[in-house]
Amino acid sequence: MSEKTLVNEEQHFEEMIAEESICTTDNLVYEKPDTLLDTPMHYCPGCGHGVAHRLIAEVIDELGIQEDTIGVAPVGCSVFAYNYLNIDMTEAAHGRASAVATAIKRVLPDKYVFSYQGDGDLAAIGTAETIHTCNRGENLLIIFINNGIYGMTGGQMAPTTLPGMKSTTSPFGRDVATMGNPLKITELVAQLPGVYYCTRTAVNNAGNVRRAKKAIQKGFEYQKLNKGLSFVEIVSNCPSNWKMTPLASNKWMEENMFAFYPLGDLKVPNDKEK
Amino acid sequence: MAKVKGDIVIDIEKCKGCELCIAACPQDSLELSRKLNSKGYQYMVKIEDNCTGCTNCALVCPEGIIKVYRQTTKKKEPVATISNLTGDITVTVNS
Image (cartoon, rainbow over all chains, first blue to last red; front, side, top):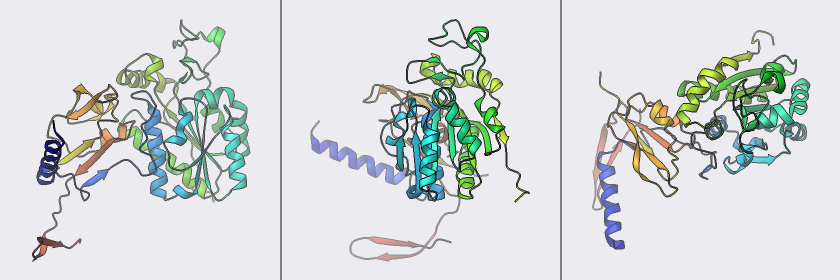
């Protein structure tokens, strides 16, 4: 096909769109936020990380704090989070994202600081840093993606893996007698006095996505008011390492993960006391 | 009651064919394509013309590649039309 016919076809197509389509800027109701870059994501199809990134970008855009936000990326699947968000971001050593975020917040107290961590990062190697950051009540937002498995390294058992759940290091299912119980880190940090707001959400359907966005928005707003630490857990799926299709993994998550990790607020600030 | 008319635009080159939007669509108007995009994934196509612009598909899309349009019920009526040599200009007022 020559170049000329291609151009003609394009013109024809554009004219056709202009005539019939309702796709005009006046009618636009939803598009990708500006803070989320156009870079194609490296995540597997159906991964919850993409939605979580987009929600952070949406909240940053709506609050208009793109210039004042600093993020800390973890080690794990979301290690390249700084490639997708158009904000200042840094990379922390494995599990130390909350410690690095503490340092950034203390040096630059006017900036909004959040750490984005997975379950292997936050609940396994970074347990000490997480618990002490929460106990000190640093003025941060911690976003915790819980998919019950080590995704990046190929599906090993994580502290949050459910009993009986298969992974490459627990091929017959997690045996509680030898491998221990799953760690409910969100319930753990909700007990600490430094934590101001603690909630558990998911991104498996449109309603939960909206709730998760509200939770992240609250986290940034409480940070603005110097209230203390906000901890937002997002229960997510891992289709590749659970060896399921994205739809089947979402269904499995609803049936099994939500039973063990019930959604909802674990610690909400009492608005009456000021 | 007049039906709300919506439309979506999918960036098919970035689509990974995870089918989450198919499950999220209350109108069942999405389907996997038979063709592949340049990355080798089947991508999403809109097959029915019954979209209401509810944004469910865009909310669950992990790649954030769906743009949603919804026709507003209020139509802006032109208040004046100015004709000149290069073409007509229609002036509307936003209320």
